[in-house]
Length: 230
Image (cartoon, rainbow, N blue to C red; front, top):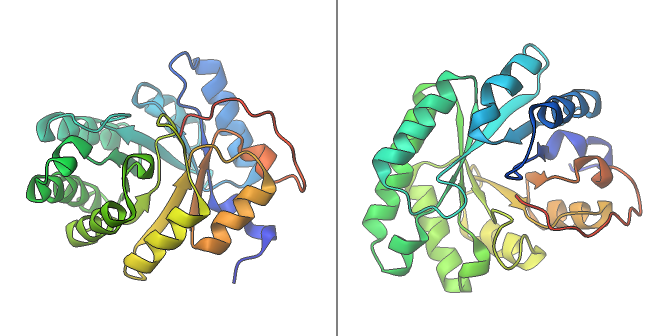
């Protein structure tokens, strides 16, 4: 059963800003260890830095693939994924190919996910698929969940944080109603307060991606509403 006491263990502490520095990534890792977060999510460039900082800490290293637009070729995503895993990532958040999806090429979308799922699972890693709910109708969300489930994703994730909006309670509830019980949900994008975090978990989110990870642990927090990338 969910308790706010274990909220930290559901958070992927995130820094994906284009100007993120090594010192900021190292600070992110230190905060994640101190708070007991599930993972840090960092740009691919910083995976080796995070892996070294978090060695034996119990905090996972997550990075992004095909981020933030998702229409990279399968070969490019494969290369990104293999390099990230080789450098120490154990969780990959890939972006759904919405260009193919919106064109009705569902077979290509499923193959794209399946390829990365196979790579991850061969290495004992997790795959999260970002479907970018801001771009989708409810019917589209249901179809995207179906494809992710068929392709073997471990999580379906709401958002990159770079679209017009991020996670919503309504989207998470819809996703939970469409996904098999063993496939988890990650809500991300614009999560800045403890109340938001709790509402999303109660709606069905198993993980929360947030750059305001520390603020989410503070009851009745009114964190500054700067754009949140993730």
